[in-house]
Length: 267
Image 1 (tube, rainbow, N blue to C red):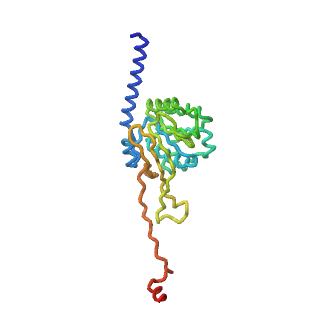
Image 2: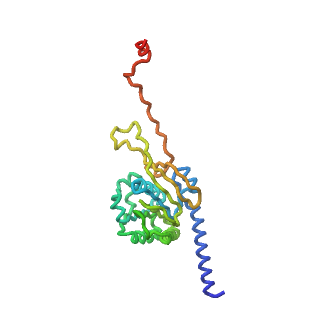
Image 3: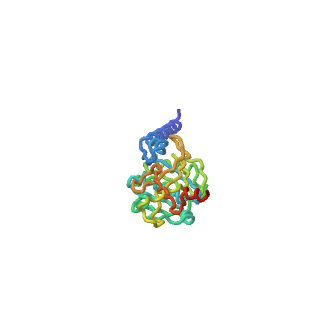
């Protein structure tokens, strides 16, 4: 066997070993989301050091942003979060609200925002960020169909995440899923939030309930897929099954005539 062939074979064996080690690491390092059925499908929780995709229709952008904020809150483990946004995404959906992130339980002081002029810049920035093991997670937000984000670009992000242990979260609005190396792929829709409690004031803005998401797991490399209503607990910073909120029974109207009186009148 020639030296060139031995070198190529050794390189190939090294690549296979790294892939197998990464697969084993996926099973060891997972973070529970808090929703029992989703965690069961994910074999214990969301895998760190991997890429996860969240898709939504353009009009569901707010719901998908809230959901991916929750995922980021679970996987960052109090380390900094880098959020890379394509400029066009901000034109379509507006700027992210730091107070809104705080309401969802994410500390804005640990969030670093990066605005990229185009898709190529966003991909380069995200790949470099995923190689930095000081970060807890990297969110890459892209709007619409992008030919630049192909299987090669997806694999580059996956390799960077596996090497550093940083989790990558891709937020894809108004885009159709394409082949990728992502560990999981989600489709997000807004779900009806529960009503506020009876002790809350009557002001409409104070009667909002906990955020709820209609989350469909379209792809899961290590388990089954599924679809669940997931409620986000802002104070605990975790997802859960929808809470049961008892509704008060309506009192009988005071002006309703007595049936016996009606019968005597009819007779």
